[in-house]
Image (cartoon, rainbow, N blue to C red; front, top):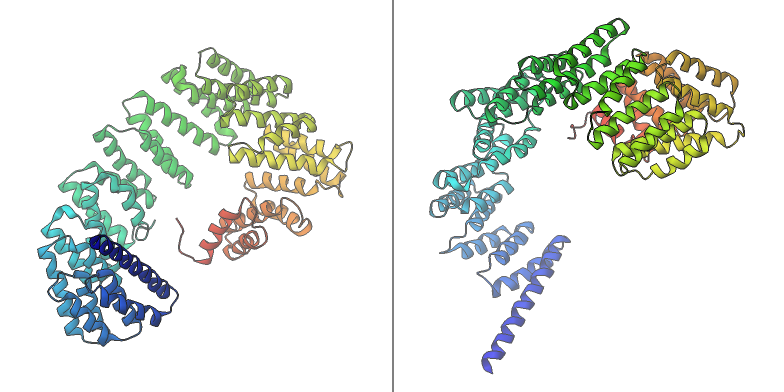
Length: 593
């Protein structure tokens, strides 16, 4: 019975101590340090061996600047005990008392404890870092690593070296780590963001590059080639990146798609010449057929974007050459569809285009591939204004892939075709369903078109102005930009007081922008900003004006002001996130990755 009572008392004592500790911690959090100190003092008197209570008590004493009491408490606590963290804290107390020699004695005692137990390196190093003693933290981790390499403090050391500006030692640790542990690659690249820039003359870039090249020569590991390729991509030296990544692909037998990706990154960043060279290198240098086909497809897509009218005949010949070389089977499906699209929309040869697609559809394609082919066939029928036939194919794709973005895209095209035809009510019915589409892009497009129809068809029972704009939109789809511009000018002239005028100006601005007439595009967007401040397109106009000012007219200060309009006046805009990023960049904030 006495033993049972003793156990009950013990549990109650422990529970009360835990509650008191929690109360003391709350006092510390709330800044009531004196109350916390008083509680910690009582707890320490009852539990002098408790590390948590002792260090918390000392922390309260330090904050109250009672350094003598803190020193006395710590010396009593560490006496005849291996208490590495407390020893570091004791050194810190001497530092606060301006007793640097005494502080160093205790710091060295803490570091020496690592010889007895290398795992103390974690807590000792962390405490040194907490006090900003990076040199001592580095020595701690280095010593622990030397005694017990398996513990591996390379990440901690690399971070400290970086903070100290010791770039070579930092990168050496990261390189050693990535060779030892491949799964660290993505983590390490994120850490590089603070040092590596797109400037090859940046000191960190040069140090990292030299170390990588040296290590590749001494121990040729594919991960080092991969890191060097990554570095060259950051510096926009895509041809050199391709060479390194090719070495990775050849030696590790990994997918060639990483080579295509480098070309795509170059293209996206506007380095068109380098992208073209990379695609050509893959076509000419690859042994396998699949990489050649994919590179040829990417190259032709790039060339179509850049081609003027004089180059179109040459492009057609090159498409034919590639298809004669690679064949017209299912493996060149994307190349054939691109050729068909090119023939229809650039060469106005819809008969040949449809023949290519129909030949593909006879090859028993996979369902998704069949959907892409039928979607393009329907687009060509819209191009020919054969709307009813187009609707049949769009509907087939929609039913074939109902929960797929391609099926949702087909449903949107059903609505868009109905809009072109002037069947506005049916178009809105389709669009209202699509506003909940899983694809955010399609949902946004559906919402935008539905608002366009609803807002501009209410006050005009004949919907004449809306029909005229729909015809202009059709002409834009058909690449008849001159006719589209005339149609929009006609709307602006004939319906000066109609709600649709802002949208007519907006479409004109988009045409000018796509044609590279940036000053005219800027002027057209400004018409909306100056005259239609309540337009649903106002945030879009602000964003486009900002983009033109920043990237084409080189007026960054005014561009920042227009991005700011979205941030401060249109927080619900779909352009908000991008505008915020550009605004911060122009303001000079650190780049947000």
